[in-house]
Amino acid sequence: MKKFFSFGASGVSAFILFAAQTNLTSCSKEKVTNTIHDTTVVRDTVTITPLTSTQILSKYTWEVYESFQVIQGVASNDTTHYLRGVVNTIGGGVDILRLTFNSNGTGTYFGGDSRNYNTTWAFTTPDEQNLTLVATNGGTVLKYNWSLISITDSSIYQTTAEYPGTLVSARWIPVP
Image (cartoon, rainbow, N blue to C red):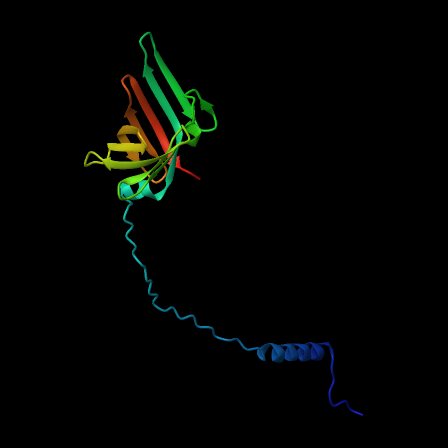
C-alpha cells in the first residue's frame, strides 16, 4: 500500500512553520492616534494692596519684645536691656505692657503698673515715622513721642526721648 502522505523531518518542520505563521498572522495591531488640542489657560490677576500703617497698628494688640534704655545720670550714664523671656535689667512690669490701637485714633494701654489707660494717638508727620501717644487714667497722663518708627505686619520699631536724659528704643510684636 502506498502512503498518501509521508511526513519526514522536512514535512514536520514545514507543518510547524505553517502553523506558527498562521498563528502569528492572526494577531492584529490597533492604531492609536493621539490628538493634541489647544489649551486655554485662565489666570485670575489679584492685585494685593499693602496694608496702611494704621491698618497694621489696629490689627493687633502689641507687647514689648525688646527694649534698650539709655539713662543719662548726674555722675554716669546707665544702659538697661529687656528681651522677652531672656533678660530684664529695666525692672518693673515690662512683661505685662500691652498696647491696642484703634483705627479712629483711640486705644488702650495696659501699663507696667497693672493699670488700664485710655489712649489717643496720631501720626505727627506725613511719612508716618513719628507718632504721639497719650495715655490717661484718672489724673495720670502719660505722653510719648515715638520717633523713627518702622511698622510692619510683624513688628513696630520705635525710639522715644522720654523725660530729660532718657532714650528708649523698643521693638513691639503682636501678642500671640
